[in-house]
Every structure is written in C-alpha cells, then in structure tokens.
Length: 172
Ligand SMILES: [Zn+2]
Image (cartoon, rainbow, N blue to C red; front, top):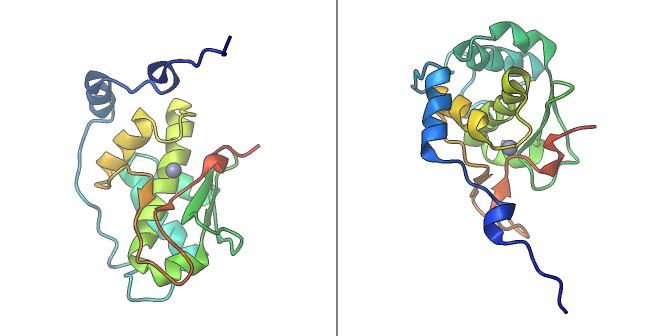
C-alpha cells in the first residue's frame, strides 16, 4: 500500500487575514516609504559598510530600534550566487551579493530592508518562519513589499526569479 501523503493544507498553513491585521496594529501601523536619498542613491557605486550601517539605522529607527544598527555586521559576499542578500539573524549579520546588486542597484535598499526585517522579526518576536507575519508587518511599516523573490533583468546565462534570501536565513 502506498504511503499516504500529508494533505497540502497541513504542510503550508496560511495565516488568516485577521491575524495579519492584529500584527500590523501591534506595530502601530505607520506606513510610508522612507527616504534614503541623502545617504545613497542607486546611481552611485555600491554603498560601503559605513553607508550600509547608516541606511540600516534609518530603517531600524522606523521600527523603534535605531541603536541596533551598531551591532549588525554588513558585508558583500562574492560567493552568493542567486541570492541578493542573506540574513544570519541569530548572529546579526547581513551578506549582500556584490555582483547582482551592482548590476541592479535599485535593489540594494529593498534587499537591505528585507534582510533587516528578518533580524528584527527574530529579535522582537522570535519569528523563525522566514517570511512570516511579523516579517511582513515590518516590511509594510517601512513601506516595502514583503515578497521574497524579485525578477531582475536577465543576464547572460542567468534566469530569474532571484531570491532575496535562501533557506540559510537561519544560521547555526
Ligand atoms: Zn527573506
């Protein structure tokens, strides 16, 4: 007799809308896209670690934790292939993909915000579901979409969609 598969509905339980609204209220929903133009714009070369920290401080301030910017390590990791960025939320580290981001600099800030939201969702709420309710509420509060994938212009030998992070959000 064939082994019975678990029903799809049990493997991927989607949150109800009312739960999401609750989380949004908990974060005293104040949405609105933040401005970063005085710190960095996509027509400039990739921001260095110091600029990434100041960009992050602004995002973290919107979430009430500007002081956390000093405890997070930012860097470019040339070994990232299809991920734009990666958050190691337990150790407070964000790796960014220098190759994909220098070719798609409009994605630098959305990726940084995405990875920061993982770290903050973990610190504030202990959220381990990588793109869960708290993550999405934080993204909305900063004025960004919570989607985990982004379609980039195709480059030679590469196809989309590219993911902002991967299964290794959870670092050991
Ligand atoms: Zn992610």
